[in-house]
Image (cartoon, rainbow, N blue to C red; front, side, top):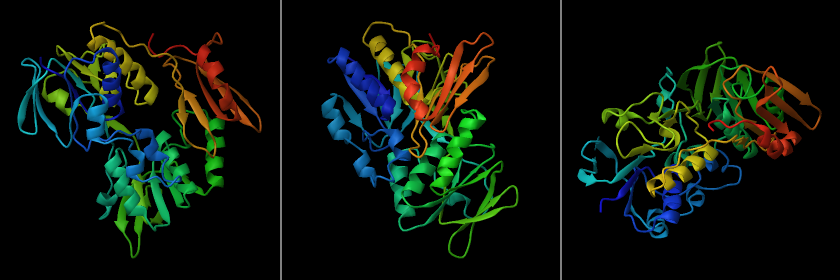
Length: 380
């Protein structure tokens, strides 16, 4: 019997494997990983520094342990070079392999800004365990970091680095942190809280160049500001990995296009996680991934199960000022904001007062469960 093959050993790939094994212990299962195939929670990468966790401590199991736990054959350090959808084969590590069903859980790559300067190639991006290990080693004994990006991951890194004792300069073209997710009063509350623990904001401008200085790196901003930092970290977003699917002739948009069953345009080929675009939705967050993995496991086990995305609030891990966001539906609406010294509750509502999404800051995050029950599904 040809195996079910999962390409990718991130949270998406391993979660699917675990969910599938709850339903089906007999079907051969093969997991191919381009990296070491250790199991870890990717959200910990932007929050582990202040707690002193090394890369080895973040990982809870290596490839051999995961192989026994599932059980499955796990092949680490192997890149998939080509995919033949018609022939139900793929080539990986120079070997031709057959599959009965294939799941692309390829993840996403950090976006690299087009920076000038002779140190542009020294800008770091952390998107996996190996990159986190390199980052930890690079900033050991350093004092000042420049951080490109004030989105969700950027804010989490800023909080974590500042809490670990680093001086942090955050640069972003948007006028406020989490500017695409939060209304102005909520974003301002977060900005002030992070500033209070030492984060210096450079908002409304972009990094133009990173160059070597006498004892550090010089970051030049588009507004003429120059900063010196011991290291530069970029956290400006992710781009789904679609190249393998595209080369195989599968339909791709921003991500690998799928229907509600996570089925791609190729027979017996599915996509899951950060690389997938499910009926136009790319949702690179943990809760959508978990929902999709459970549904796909049932489909692979023989019961076709469309994925449903209920309201799934995102917890932004900024202890200096906790934030919860339930992404507003892409519909016309306005923010209705209530605030006091303890926190901010912002409801995104339509013209009839129906809740489309919400943002909670500070003490108002205690309202997460109550508002989640009222918020509409992302995909019903």
